[in-house]
Image (cartoon, rainbow, N blue to C red; front, side, top):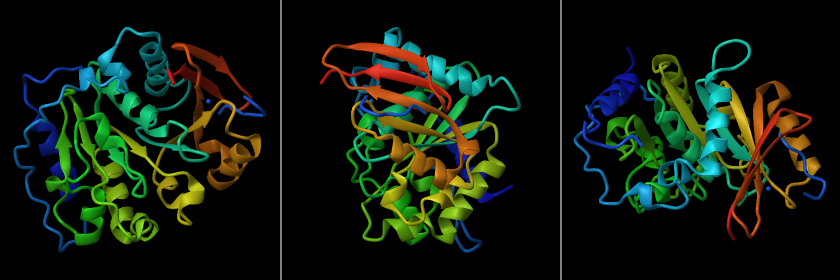
Length: 284
């Protein structure tokens, strides 16, 4: 059993029992090495911050809202596919920045963790512009993935508990000077391989930068079961989507979440040429 697996297992076991469970002009829809010691995850105090009060984490703050229902629909399509086994390792990305990928990754992770039996690890691999920590009350100054990859510190020291039961997060850590090199490093490949191989009872949601932001975009794609693509209505162009399909391959795309940016809160759901499309309207 790998060291990373043991660290993740211990992180899950140490969750406090009392913790709560908790966008269209021309748009398309769709490890550690042997010298690295991974010690037991030390007790981590959950931040004195209620994620239920964070309006951006809608699946926790307003679990009965129309937007949360859209995430449940997305979750159910992942957990209960028409064919084959459910994808356990899922990459969430977008064609360009500011299209809402971190919003989707965080809320999807919470929605899955709110299920009866599912445990989730949410990883922030957007080392250039990390956001995941903000959804869960962390400041971004804490050690995270970049520190693990750069300094080969124990994985257990960078895994963080949340006040959502069954959800562990790995934040990005300090913004490094060489994000592309870290994401394509042997250490990163070992991490992804070990997590997928050894922790196959947990859903792994990976927030990644747009593919054009790193020349090594397809490194992580090789280790995931599927990709969810985020596009923004009125912003993402069809060519940007087809370029992503060329990079990752259509067979990797699980579906597309369309961010409908409107002034009134609402939601949308529909089909498209590539797969299912799930949309939300977010108040500007």
